[in-house]
Image (cartoon, rainbow, N blue to C red):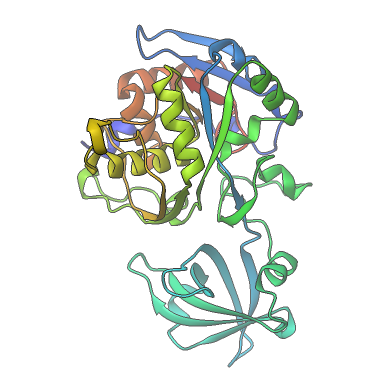
Length: 357
């Protein structure tokens, strides 16, 4: 499989620069995998395609104000960090980050932010060219210091400043740790979620802290040689139980976004390797898991946990458009994207949505 097969043409003016208000007034392209039909609706009409007993599974990760501007301790020269993810496997204050100027920031160097309120020491270079850094807050309150000193890391294709930083968070974001928003969830409002729950549709949450691959295109021509950057995920026992009960009752698991898909499919792969329980009881669809995943979903992947997907329109030649193509088929996805361009849908983080059934 060649990455060129996942390219498409997008007029630059279709890249959404600001969020639409209210959130659920965005457009929705409904894609039917069986038959290939495409329907144009509004996002707030999504309940027409869901049914009682279905379960929405969304990523509750919260975007960190992760862009930090400071100086080098030795020279006073400008330095910048973009925190990608906490590396709890390396220690509670260790983070993976992109740095600027990249070539000049070496192991052992110290960076100072907020006149000494926050210090970062560069510990090592990552395989992808970033850095592992150790963060130290002068008052001992690292989360509070990051919230005070950091800036929201909007994607590079958004050129207009954001008036309200909360508009780049989902309404259910509560676990800080991402370098970018799980954008499929940006369309939900409290009223829409309440209406869906009143319709008998459940809502459950997982966590994936979005990291480096959001900012990194696929460099290799051959997809099978692409190494996915690992990200921290969690699916707790309560959510695993709800997923298993939903499937057992004939309901569908509907992933809200590609990050939720990766959590679900990672946990499903672990479950598939487990043996049946006592008495011949079949294993759960997923199992509880907390750790890291580097799962790269490409065509040929067997989906075990996801029955339908809500997603935004993604960058060409990206791991995300490859994932969506694995779920719905490359030809159908590219036809849907071409239809979205022809109908002047809004693309990327602040753009419109797709529901793939």
